[in-house]
Image 1 (spheres, rainbow over the protein chains, first blue to last red):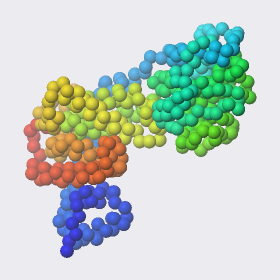
Image 2 (cartoon, rainbow over the protein chains, first blue to last red; image 1 turned 90 degrees about the vertical axis):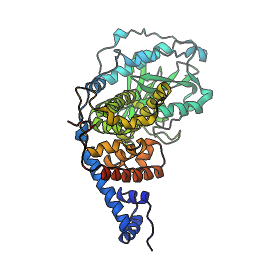
Image 3 (cartoon, rainbow over the protein chains, first blue to last red; image 1 turned 180 degrees about the vertical axis):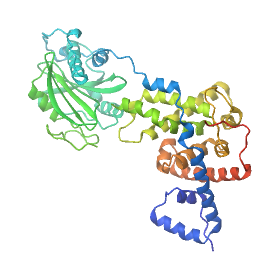
Amino acid sequence: MTVYIDDSTLAAYVDGELDPAQLREIDLLLAGDPRARLKVRRMRETTALLRAACAESHFQDVPDRLLALVEKRPARAANPWLRRMLAASVLLASLVGTDVVLDHVWKPENVATLDSREAMLDEIAAYHLVYARQTEHLVEVPAERREHIEAWLGSLLNRTLRVPDLSSQGLKFEGARLLAIDTYPVAQLLWSREHGDPVALCVTFGSPSNRPLDIEHHRGLNVGSWDENGYTYVVVGAITEDSVRRIAAKVDTGTGAGMGAGIGLGEVPQQG
Amino acid sequence: MVENHVRSALVPLYPRLRRFAAALTGSLAEGDDLVQHACERALTRTYQWQPGTRLDGWLYRIIQNTWADERKSARNRTQAPIEAATDTIGDDGVRRAEARITLDNVYRELCNLPEEQRAVLTLVCVDGLSYKEVAEILSIPVGTVMSRVARGRLALADRLDASGAHSGDNVLKLR
């Protein structure tokens, strides 16, 4: 008696979707079922005809409007980080009840001609000086909604995001905001200190190449940045270099791992 | 950066995107419009693409979703039946002086199939995507992909048998 092979199974057979055991079984059944063998042949012939009729060469014409779209670049300010960050009001000092004396005057014309990364870090520092003076609305989403922050910003960055526990550094998590830089989401997490300016950790999409922690001095602030697993991390604040290193060490850069694991400075993790 | 990668990949991927869009819409001209709209959308959402995953699959999904949105808008505006799209290929002819496309009988019969079969056949039989990948792009179960591929391919075979040799009428000519 011929066992009936349904059309879906025959299609999967033709398209190589069956596992080896299933393949052997269907081969045996086909040997005794000429009707099914005919269907297989028709399916294969039709597939071959489709590939010929739909070859990429028939669809090669790229219209001018697509070329224009691809070549178009959004208008960029000279300092895109600064432009974006200035759109948000970040207020710190008053929340911790501490007057912060900032002796550096922010002047955009002070930015020298730097490479793009240095320019970006300089702009982060310049903006930090501005929002550090604010007295209200330090964050967009307060720390009480931490789980929401992690889910929300993590989904935008296509990763698991966990707020580092920096309490051992004397830092209190205040909340977060979302920034946008050239359509890229930037998760900004903020911590306050009993004495001193708040500190920020920014996470965004970065270079596919890993880059160890590097601390630079911009506008009177220490700015530590590194790239790992396709993300850029930036720690910024009126803090010592050692503090930057300790904070960076607390940041878990695993895209799927939970918080607290951290990585050691100088380690080069496996790139995914 | 991710945006640059996506932007630079659009032109080399364009023939495949165009092919899929034409299969969805049943019309090369509509397919071209769909690809343009989908690429515009993609470039505003490049952060949603995860490096390391298939960029073509992500773009196919955007094309599929854009088409669904456009059909919904068109339905709301004109109340025209969605099935009208399947007739477009026969009535289209030359729509733009600068782009005259010729399809052989196979492609014409493909476009006469129901939309859901056209999309699956294009992705599986022409692009060579797995059933699982197609299921993710079209947001349908793998079993549905299997049945649509089977039905669509056999239906196309029947149509080709019935239509015989190529017809010179109502074709869009490929350069």
